Image (tube, rainbow, N blue to C red; front, side, top):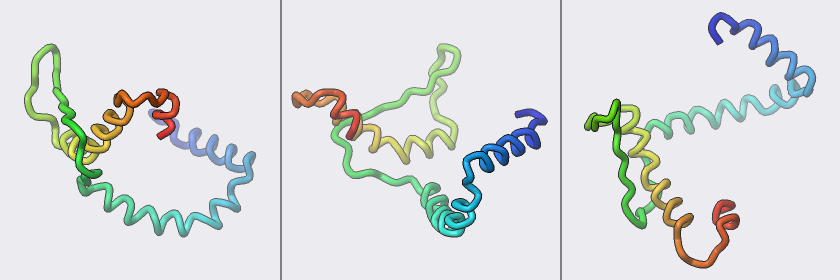
Length: 106
């Protein structure tokens, strides 16, 4: 969007007017802002989503070389979402006779 911020904002404003979302946004934006503040603060804390059912590992490679330690922001994201991804993989790949379409809904 290099140098196109004003045009982009104009396009968003035009879309908002066409969809008539202005009233809705004005009515619900104070609640959205109120909920966004604690949600944003909680997102900064790594959280474990229950005990994992197995082990999920991540390797970080650059130019065919193992680079060792991940950058801090990737370590944070991995700490936050690793157990959720491990649980999701356990559900998806379990041999329990459930069709994959039903598992993906879950």
